[in-house]
Image (tube, rainbow, N blue to C red):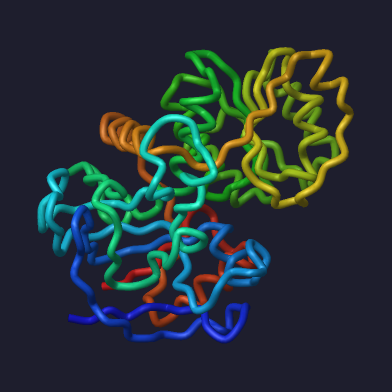
Length: 339
């Protein structure tokens, strides 16, 4: 029985990722051992490897928060899952329900919560695992814990959408594509922005009602607002510093801006009256709890949503997977096959 792991050692940087063999240990009380078959990358994972996410991160560490596979062993007291079940990890292993707090947010895998999913076996609390629906492949499930649940929280739990609502999404990263798919599932209209005609075709195939190319249209925010044909109820903002001001000018009075990413910068200068005088809700979103994760899995099972997988790499080429994300060469999710 092997436990190969891609480990960040000796400093930060993609070139510091090394393939190592780790011991396989048995689960203790309340724990399960997952044979990880697939892991998927998020921007957070790249930032961790590059030393940006947490420059004081203790090394060595196995990166990545998202993964799915087969339950290989369970410890005493485990009742939710059985050996042989297909299961997917929940991002915050200690946030099962309710409001977040510092202790719950410190349990994220591949970071403050310890080693992540870029290894063939992983011991976690059984409560951190969710059974994969029969309609969903293990590979597809591995794309969901961070990007999928973040989009679900923004659109379904916090967005207040109803049929006919209007949503604006930004780009073609994992969160944005899931947000588009979930918004369409809720019966909303979606205006999507992107940087290329090729990516626009993907967005239209997924159900976007209108796509605006912000590279070729400098006044993309006005084009999105005009194309909405009415008030914009929710904006899923992944740009941060580069897009928040535009989002504030687009959103309707009383609407919600789901603040998710900082791809355009971690600091923003905004015109405060646009939020204050129009009672705009600025809603930070950091993934979600296990109850929401399981609700998302049920929704995907019921509606047949297929995650968009852009690239696949074997574990031995995990460095290339991170380089693909760094170079923005993907549309959707990047998956690493650990089998």
